Amino acid sequence: MEGRYEQDLDDSSFWPALDARPPSTVTTAFHQGQVAQLAASGWGRCPSVAAAVAEARLPPVTREYLQDTVTAAEWAVAEQSVAALEQHFRSARFASEVDWGLLLVPDRKRLDTRRPMPTHVRRDQLHEPVEDVFDSRLGPGKLAIPGTGDWALVATVVGPCGPACGSYQELAAAPSEEFTVLGTDTRRLMTRQLWGARVLQAGQHPPDCDRNDRWTFTLFAGEPLTDHRAESGTVLKGKVRFRLGKSDRGIGSARVAPAIAIC
Image 1 (cartoon, rainbow, N blue to C red):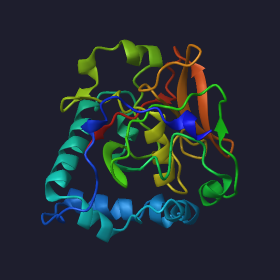
Image 2: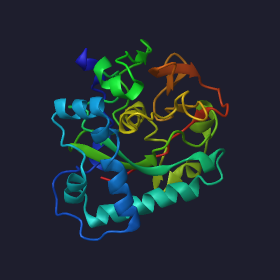
Image 3: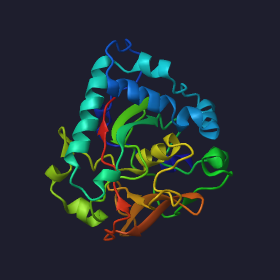
Image 4: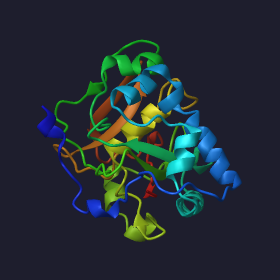
């Protein structure tokens, strides 16, 4: 079973490790705000998710950990990346609904967010221990984060929903400049792995959920088609769902999460 989840992204050297390095010494409002948000996220404040972090022997996400492991230079890149994403996608449909920020993605060897979570992990997220719905046709999923450190830091969508940019087919056919920000084609990281991490980080307020003001689902444009159908993720009827659907479905509920690697 474990072998199904060992598909790596070819250019894994693109990702530096988020390991212990000299602590940051320069702080900005962005830096302080993101540290506060990450420290208060589901990784540490949602009991069942925090327990999964501890079981995986990952460092707890605290202010001290973030201050000690992310350098001033990396915070500067993070701030530039978040601002650039917001600016680039400002004219997309529903751009005003999007919260941009930083996502932590765990080492997949310890906590693989491409796969369904055990029921106890969802207990405090969804108010009861429930199984994820995972389409049996889905493959291992692209390894967008190759696991070179405990946590990877990514600039992306962190709120309830991303912008609407069309169907999977439209995303795949679009010129690269439409999605390239700071030299990165942001479609590359629109993957199951990042969405799975985003659901955990959101704690008791999962994205793409029918409890939110607007129900949405996130298209995984960085994943290949399966049986001519597109992957997506949503939280519907009390369950986290990893789904397959029509690749030409470009309705307003179909959202994306453009992303840029930081460290």
